[in-house]
Each structure stands twice: as C-alpha cells, then as structure tokens.
Picture 1 (cartoon, rainbow, N blue to C red):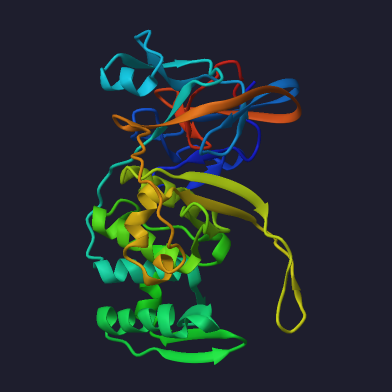
Picture 2: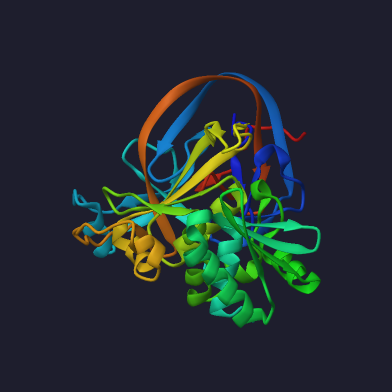
Length: 364
C-alpha cells in the first residue's frame, strides 16, 4: 500500500509532479534536502483501507507510509522549549495525531543577473502576464491604471529600456510590449499558460532580495489582504507556481500555508458571458506577523489593511526543516491504483511532507 494518484512529488526545481506521472530519472528532493534521481516506480491495485492525514498548513495526504517526524527526548510538554534545549531527534515512523512532521527547506543558491526591479516585474507577470505572438501582455484591472499598470510600465522602461503601450479596453488596463528577446526572457523565467507557469531556478534559488521582490510583485498582482486578520492570500491556478512560492517562502523562514481550493467558482463577465473554472485553484497564505514584510513595501497591499495586530513571533522551523502538525488521522476506503517510488535513500517529499518508501510494492 502507498500513495494515491495526484499525490504531488517535489522536484529539484521546486515544482511538483503527480506521482503517477513521475518518470525514471526525474530528480526529486529526498529527506536530506538534496536532489536524487528516481530509480524505479512501483504500482499495484488496492481495494481496502488507507490513512488520510490532515496536516496543518499543507494539503492532506492519503497513504500508508512512514514520515520524517520530530521525536522529543524530553518530558517537557512545551514542544518549542524542548527544541530550544536541543532535546529532540529526527526519525522515520508512523505519524500520530499532534505529532510534528517535517517539510524540507531548500536553500540552494543559483547565481543570476536578475536585478531587483526585474524580479518584481517578473512577479507581476507571473500574476497578470501572458504571451500574444511576440508580445508581452500585462492585464490589470481598469482601476489599477494609475498604480500597478504604471508601476509595470516604469519598470519595463527602466530595466529593459523598452516602450510599452497602454490600452484601456473591456474594463482592463492592458500593457503590451513587442520585443522578441524580452518575450523569450520572460518565457524562460515564468513559462506560458496560467495553469502551467513554472519558475526558473534563477528565481526559485536566487538570493534573498531577488526572492523577496519576485514574491512582492506576484502578491501585488494576484494577492489580497484579509481585512480582519491582515494575512496575505496569493491565488494561482498553477500548482507548480504555488509550490515554488512555498519553497521560496520556506527558504526565507517565512511561515505560510498552501490550500487546494478546487476549481474556481463560475463568474460573470461584463458582456454577460459565464466563465466556469476549469483548473484547481491554489492559495498561498502568509500570516500578518510575517506578511508585513511585503505589506510595508507595497502601496496596494498596505491600503487594504489598517488595523493594529499584535506581532507575535511565529516559529515553525527546526534546523533545515519546517514542521507541520498532524491535525487529524482517519481510515478511509480506497479502490484503485497506488504508487510508490524508489530512490537510493528511500525518501522523497509528497504533498510537501517528507515520506519514506514502502517496500511492500512490486516493480511495475
């Protein structure tokens, strides 16, 4: 027994691939946070019971495998006090309710010549950009003509010395740039099609300021601030982009959570047409305590929240890992194919959590 289809396996570039789509030779992340090649993939038909784990700040996972978890070497009931006293170890074992499971923190570094302004512009494009023939196109709301649209135009002119045209059509402020080289650059770093945008390693594993400015631009385009709590919520239909943002935030020691909210609800356009959501929507949430790092740098985000919130220091990071608490563990019925992977150290990351290979499956 092992993982059900659509379990997301973390690849070495921070993106994910469903376990059923993993190929031999794919580079995935192991429990020691380094890239390992998939040596084999296993599958079998299963009809019976599996375990569903609901995990704090992560997508639920259905499997029957062991997890990399925190083991306290102390009778102290306060987990973080025991951790601060270095009275813990990291072990593989069955996950129980309330236990802390580990997610990797990838702190690889890839050098790049991306400037901070370019990183912010690439973030805006990841949220609001598309390609039309050889054109770069940014589509902002009509009300954002004097804010984000102006910011994008200024950045394009300053960073790339190109002229951008602005058109106000269909209640949108649309920016267009006709430049083949620039289009190729943005395609390299972001990719095409909203549901399949995937970031380059230069962005995912850039330096601190590069990652901060990229995430800032993305949040300005596809983010909002909750008026009650001040938390920032970034939304995308690209599971790769969502997971790569999580990898970047973890590397910055910024707390976050990821939700798969299913297909977007139908919406009505101004001309009466109904748009029906086709792809799953992913939401990345950052608590106010740490989201303030982005709020303070953005006029758009700052204007959405004016309440005073007590800035309680959050701490969910242990060495090179981030912890996720098991909130619920339940037995579920499942009938269908289950999968597992073979890596030389027998570990990989599934739905953001470090797991161990189940040796019960046979080679396909």
